[in-house]
Every structure is written in structure tokens, then in C-alpha cells.
Amino acid sequence: MAQFRAKKLDLSCFVNVRVIRDHTKRKVFEQYETQRYIYNALLHAARQLISVPDRLRQALRYIIRNTTLPPRARAQAQLQLSQMHAYTRSTQINNRCIEGGKSRGVLRHFRMARFSLPFEDCITMYRLHESALPADFQFPADLEKLGYAINDMDQIRSLKNPDQEFNFFISKNERMNMVQREAHNTCIRKNIQSRVLASSMNLTNLPLGTPSTKPHIPIYTSTNIATCNRLIVYIGESWQDLGIFAWRTIGHESIAAGSILNFIDAIQSSSTESPGVLIANTGQLLWYRGGSRAVTPTTWMALPRQWAVSPPMEIDEEKNRVPGHRDAKEHVASIFDNVIPKMCKKGVAIDVIGMGDGGPIIAEYLQGNWKNWKEQVKAAAIGSGPIWQGDKIADGEFAKFWEERTRAYIQSDEPVGTPLTGREDFGCNCYSAGQNEVLERVMPMAHSDMLKFFQLVNDVPGYRELPEMTAEDVDV
Image (tube, rainbow, N blue to C red; front, side):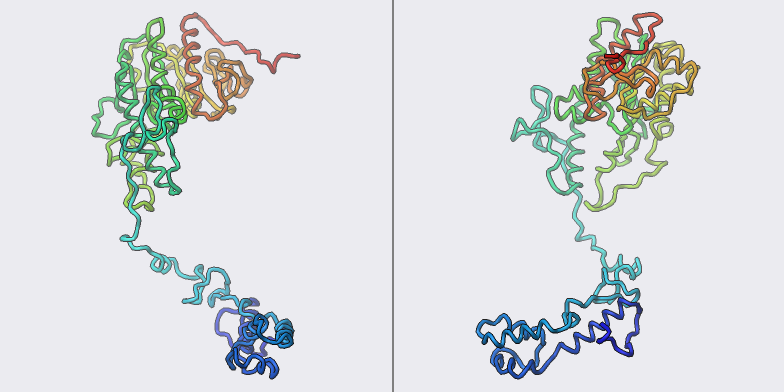
């Protein structure tokens, strides 16, 4: 490069080593760009085919590739081209930003890198007019119009192909898939709610007495909640819809299997006095004012937008939250502090189920308020992954209850109810949930075994769990 470098630079922009190098390349290319004569011999051979003033390199390449010319002329052109310096190639030139010398993202019209342009100018330059923005997607909340139906086995299947389950990926557009899924889930939620309300259950708004038009959180309560001697409280995952255990189970098996329908039926069909039921709603804690209903974060992301590319609506912590139910912990505390004392008879025996992150939430609440509930809470069951996600249970009266009258059903491929290791981590005996796929399927698989455990605790006075012996504990 030294043989080409100019003694004096004629630059009036940002200068660094790379800018000087590219400037030298431009000068060299400019010097060899036009040439009147290649050589007398080559020009005589190609006089009829190329113009006199032309680019040297292009002329040489033309001569080399032209099979009609004499081989000697083509060979001389090849030799001349191979002897030319690399800087005479146009491909060696890089566009450089006159402000920072960057070679990436340079806008030729401005001779500046996009990083050097002011942010406001970039917005103005690249702003797409609203008339050109795509409209948001819309799908009817009707299974038949979506192309699905509920068959005789309580399964959701395609109308065109009775063996096909719900298809989420109908497009490469994520927004379209999300809106279609929400329309499908809306249909299922309505179906489940109508069947739950027909099964001796009520829809109760929290705070108690709140009309449906005002911000509220709905929960399910059994019709006998005011007179029952025993109450089963279910605390679900903090992202799941009310009444839903696992959307996967609903899609693969049946609506009843993946929701609280089979769970309620198992409770009400018990041979002894049917206990009351309270289904908490730790997932739908966002108040959607446009629809006057509580929704989950997943549903919030699928709500209608102005354009398909518009960002989701911002969550206003005052307008989109319900006082006393701003998060799952507040919701659980409200149920125990306000709902159960007002809706149930005094001294009602309580069995608690905590699913997913609902397990640590209910453990934290009971541990902090154990003196108020130690006479009423008889047993607890949690559904969890292989690792306890909550704080370690502190020593004391509640720790003793947790050890003796609590079971953890964790993900495992062993049959449901098989004793497993993990007592040191969970603070109680651990049993298999019958599947090791996803956490949300623990409840559909293990709720029958949980109910048997609750019945056992209430039937046997002074019942307590002993440390279980597992296959790993046996010395073979």
C-alpha cells in the first residue's frame, strides 16, 4: 500500500487508519479506472469490440472471456490483469461514515452510519404510515367457526379431520397464532364454566359482594360451603385460568380431565358426606376494563390491539388491579382472612391443595398465620416439580404439621402414589405424580390420590405421616 499512499491527504472528515486506507484505494481505482489504450497489440485485436476510453480491468476481463479473439491476445490480457494491484478492484472500496469512520450500516445517501444519526431522525426516516400498518387479527369465539367441535369423548377435534387436535401453528405469524388460541380458549372456558355451575357450584366475586360490572376476581365455591363440615381449598398456578388444570390434557385427553370437572365429580361422588369446595383464582388477577373481566397475563397479551404490530396494552397498577388481589399472595391471604370466615361455618375443617407456585405461597401464608389456623387445617397436598421452589420450612408447630400431615406429589415416571425421596428438600413425604412431562399435568394425574389422603387424615384421629421407605433406601 505504501507505493500508492499520497504524500498529502485531501480529506475533510473523520480520519483514522482505516479511512486513510480506503481513501488510498479510491485514488488508485480512480487512476486506473479510465485508460485510453490497453496496449497497442491488445487494442488492435479488440478495436472492433470495445470502446477506446473504457475501464482497464473491465476491458481486460472482456478480452480474456472473448473466445473470438486470438489466444495470444487473451493470454497477454490475462497476464496484465494478474499483475495489476488488488487496490485497482472496485470491490476493495468500503463506504465509510464521514462522522465516525464506521464501515457497517452506512447510508450512501447521507454518507453516514445509522449509528451516527440522531434517534429522532431515524424515527422520522423509517416511520411507516399508519395507513400501511396491518390490521390486528380477529377470530370468532366459536368452535365451529374456528373449525373444531367437541366429540362424544369430550375431546376437541377438527371438523375436517376428526383425529386432528387443536392446531396452534396455523401461520408463521406469532400474533395470528396467539389470537387464534385465545379465541379457542375462550370457547373452552365458557364450556367449563357452564358445566361447573351445573355441578352444584357457584361463581363468587371477590371482594365479596362486588357486582360483575365492577373490578373483581371470580372464584368457584360449592353450594354447600356455608353448611359443610369439611372444606377443600385449591390454590392453582399463578398463570393458569380459573378452573383449568392443564391445557395440554384438555387438548390430548378431554375437557373434563384437564379441568376441575373430574376433580369436583370425584369429591361429590364420595361415599361419605360431600365436603365443600373452594377453587381459588391465582391466575386471572388482571382486570380488563374493555371486557369487564379478569384475565391471565397470557390472555392480556392476546387482547385486541390497534394494529397487528402494536405493542400490548400497558398494565396500570391502579386501574388494572383489584384491591386485595394484586398478586397471588394477596389473593390467598384474602381467601383465608375474608372469604372462609364469612362464607363457612365456624371451625370448618380445611384441606389445602397447592399446585405449582401455589404450594410455596400457601406454605408461606400458613407458616406466618399458623396460630390462627392450626385447629382447622387438617392436611395439605402440593403438586410440584422435582425441586422445592419455596423457602425452607422453619422449625416449630407448623413444621411438625408439614412433616406429619402434608404430602408432595412431584413429577416422576413411577406410578401415582409411589413413595419417592425428597423429604429433606420438601420437608414432607414425597410421592410420584405419575408423569414426568410438564408440571401442569401433575394435578390431573394425582388429584384422586390427594383426595384419598385427605379422607384418610379425616377418618383416622391423630393420623400422621411417617418417613417413607423408598427403593433407594433399601440396601440390596
